[in-house]
Length: 93
View 1 (spheres, rainbow, N blue to C red):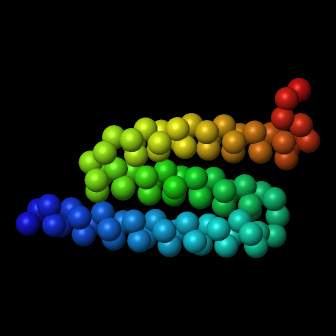
View 2 (spheres, rainbow, N blue to C red; view 1 turned 180 degrees about the vertical axis):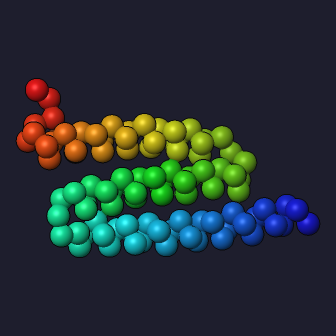
């Protein structure tokens, strides 16, 4: 009984995360400014990371958790680099 509740909860969470990814994608493509697009991209990578975590919870495989960790690290660095590029016009000084 509890395994079924967990599977239903994971599936519901995945549906909500996919909906959030769709909304973030719309904001990324239709954003009026570059800052809006960067925030949408930041939200998109966080949602992708959460989606991988829910896949890992649902299947019990460790590879999804490792991929989520890599996405988290690379996404943070990419967001910082894009913000620095918008502020100064260059990433490496």
